Amino acid sequence: MAFLMVLCLCQMPQMVWAAEVTEKMPQGTETEKLTEAETVPESEKQTETEKNQSESEQTESNQSAVIFQIDDTHIYEGMEKAYKDGYEPTVADDKVQMVLPLVAEDMKTVSSVTVTPNLGDTGTAPFVYKNYQKTFKATEETVNGTKDKKQVFLVNYTFPLKSDRKNGTYPVVFDVSAKADGQEIQQSFTLYVTIADEKKKDTVKKDSTSDVSVSNDGENSSDESEKPTSEPKLIITKCQSDPERLEAGKDFTLNVEIKNTSKIKYVQNMTIDVTCAETNLTLKADSNTFFFDRLGSNETLKLPLTFSASAGIQEGRYDIQLSMSYDNPDASSLSSSGTISVDIHQPLRVELEADELPDSINAGDTMNINVQALNLGKGAIYNVRCVVDAPGLSTGTSAYIGSVEAGSAANGTLKIFAGMKQSSADGEMYGETSGKLILSYEDEDGQTYTAEKEISTVINPLDLSTDSSQTEEKKQGVSLQWYIGVIAAVVILGTAGVIIYRRKAKQHEQE
Image: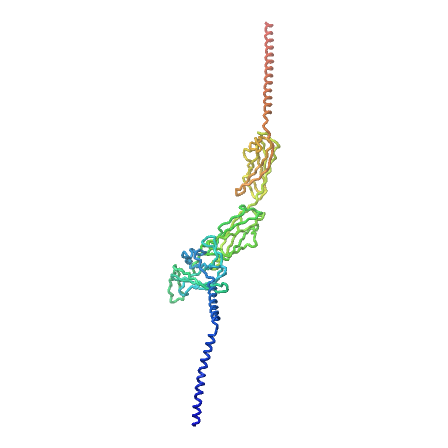
């Protein structure tokens, strides 16, 4: 027993030393770890820090490379004022239209943006809730009501309003997201809508014996359907033809102008169908349907239409119909139509025939020339008359022929007087002269046309010598007659004297 106690006392220092060693070993291990950490080169620690800082700055740079801003200086479609002048969303016809023009410093960096409207609490907000998320691309839009254009992400929403909405001002948050250089961009813009047309409901208490309850909106109307809204309408405002006179057998172009009469709403997905019932009047196009992506509010679209009128088409007026289908900003389908009336004329074919003038004519003489108007066309001509236009030749009045029906002829007589060529370019008073007979006529619209025929002749001078000889001959004839009369009188008187003498001598003998 004593031996065992001595043995235990001898082993106690070893146990205590082992415990101390065991307790110190963990501490030594931790110290070694700290020492190893401290042995990391300072340059490597600094490089790691700079690396983390550089990555952070690069991320912030990428995120801030594209920042969207509201274009507050221009007025776009659907806006009455620019943002800097106090733009407010338009509330009308139980709807609110909100326009948010977004621009970036470098518009080429982002091709499109995705917008998600946050309309607020469904219980108190005045909006009809549904999924309104849309993607908008950068487009060229007209600004300030002019033809000037600016590239912009034109965020345009039309939200229907609840029939039981309350007056007040309500925020609408537009969450905008996009990608630029592989980085996600997210921004939010808040607009405020002021409601001032609260519609109160008059509820009729339910009869205890009936399961039907009636509620009347606004003006005690039993119909709970929403009030019809004012929608954009397309009309034909102008049409000009080229050429002005449309003739059978020829092509012509109609320059049509179509206007969106709405001042706040655009139209989209437009199709225009062009039709004409007349088979001899055809549209020169691959298709009679034309498509247009969009037409802004109060904007005008120009549509050239080229037609071909066959030679056999009857003269008259023909109608061309334009049927227009399009969508409003809410993608609701709408339609309108218009009619263009065109007057097609048969080409006028008129010829003038006339007697040939004599080779020469004496000055002071008058000659009658027969003229004939030939109407070879398919339409009547009116107020047909003929005159002469040549130096030294003139007419007191024109030869009036009148109206000539299609495929017929009419005659007239033209009295031409020969005088002196006072207006002649060569300065001669007489001699050869040339000109033309002019036939003028009108179509059914009163437009004047002419047909001509070349003429020529020689005007002889006035022969004064011939007149003197004739006068002299007349004088000689008178003198001869006088002498004969005198002789006859002498003979008669002599004979009478002889007879009287003989009678007196006979009387003396008888006595």
